[in-house]
Length: 76
Image 1 (cartoon, helix red, strand yellow):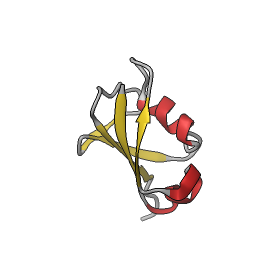
Image 2 (cartoon, rainbow, N blue to C red):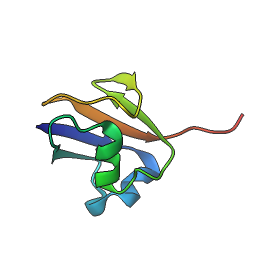
Image 3 (cartoon, rainbow, N blue to C red):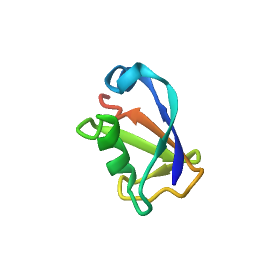
């Protein structure tokens, strides 16, 4: 399956090529955390959206989905 991946803010610096948007082929049943690992950002605190809806790290995207990764917000 193929998903579109969007990476924001300082996470782009960690992704090979530093691209804001790319496509990625994944095995069927892969989770967004496995996708993050593949991109080299799985060890970062992340917020995830799938098709513009907030998602947990265990969700399994479908073919054609858009998965967006944001750095987790902190502070007060």
